Each structure stands twice: as C-alpha cells, then as structure tokens.
Image 1 (cartoon, one colour):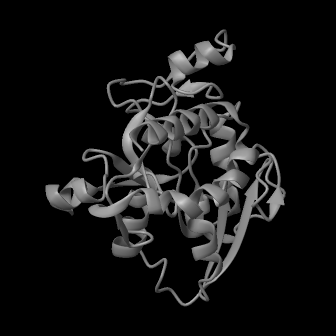
Image 2: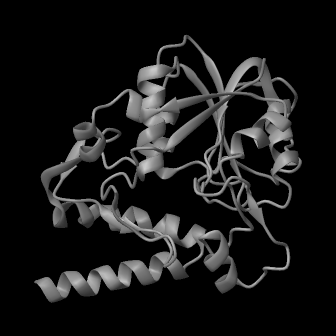
Length: 264
C-alpha cells in the first residue's frame, strides 16, 4: 500500500507540473472523487468545504513545492482558505443584499459556491479557462466602466505583460466604493519586485520566479503596485485574528497577508 501511495504521489506531482492548465482543471474533477478517501482523518480541516482529513496534498513547482497544503475535496490552497476567512468574517460578501461580482481566473473551489449565492450577480472571465463565462485579455477588458462591486483576480499578475495596465482595467470596471482581492505569489524576503525580461526559458523562469509561466516575482512592494493603479490598500493579517492552533489546523501560512484594494 505504501509503494502504491508513493507511485500515486509521483504521478500526481508529474502531471501537476507538466499538463496545461485547462487539462488540469478538467482532470481535477475526476481526481477529487477518490482523493478524499485516501486522506480520511481529522488532523487538518478546510474551512471552505468544512471537511477534515489526515493531511492535505502537496502542491507547487519543484522550486516552490509545499507539503500538506491542497485540500483533496475542494482543492483549496492556503491562499484560498485565507481569502474565504476574510470573506466570511470581515466582509459583506455573503450578507449584502446584492453585489455585482467579476471573478477573473475563477478558482474551482469557489466558482460553484459563488454561482449558487442568491445575492450575487456573478460573472467569471479568463483568457483560456474552460470554466469561465467569457474569455478576454486582461489588458483590455471588454466590459463597461463602474459595473462591479467586487472583483477577484488571484495569481494572475505574475503572468501578464503589464500588471499596472491590468490593474487599471480592473479599477475601471469597478464601481466607486467597490473592493477587490488580487493575490499574487509574494517573496517577503524581497523589498522590491524582481523582473528580468531576458529570462524567457521555462526552466529559468521557474528558477527565478517560482513557476515556468511566471514573468516576475513580487516583493514586499506589491501593495504599491495596487496604489499606483488607483487603489487604496488595506491589509488583512490572519495571525492577528486566529490563534496558532487554528492556523495550523487550517494549514494557513501564519504571516501571509491579504491585501484588499478599494476604489474610493
């Protein structure tokens, strides 16, 4: 049994780092049917699906691989669980009478939950994702000004040619008073975001930017990028809200910060 689990783990890691994103999205629906059975237990818990397991799955590239982070049922990662806790405990996302929401690069762990919410006019968009409602380039969003109360666009800005232009496009389609969550991989050891347009090979990009299709690695200055695009930024620090035992049970990154970008 141990050898079988090791073989499954090696296959999982290979597919995760080899297959294109649209293919991975489709395969994940099959994977989640049997993965929870293999990880039955009560050591860790996902606050999104509210299920517990013996452990979470590993995830990430060879450079940024992490153990015990991916929920085998709804496929949440640390960043998804962090965002969920903010939405549930600190925002009006579930309680407002009506919200117009744009979700760029919609995560599988959220899309079906949000679609079922009666208080949301919920639209999803992506360049290629098969689960998105509409497809567009984030540098030129084909939607009108001042339309959305809430925008989600997570782990996208490390892929695009011009993050500021994309952020300004999201700012444009948001209503005054609206807010956005735009998470990115962030190296907190770096004061300034690292970019180098001469790094073009997938292997070198993974080495320098943590993933083969990343073109930059944001540093501690990421909130300033949001501010340059017009947003006012507030920070949600989960370590000031939850105790260490809960953070460990939910498998969160203790000092990860969530930036909430407001359009005043």
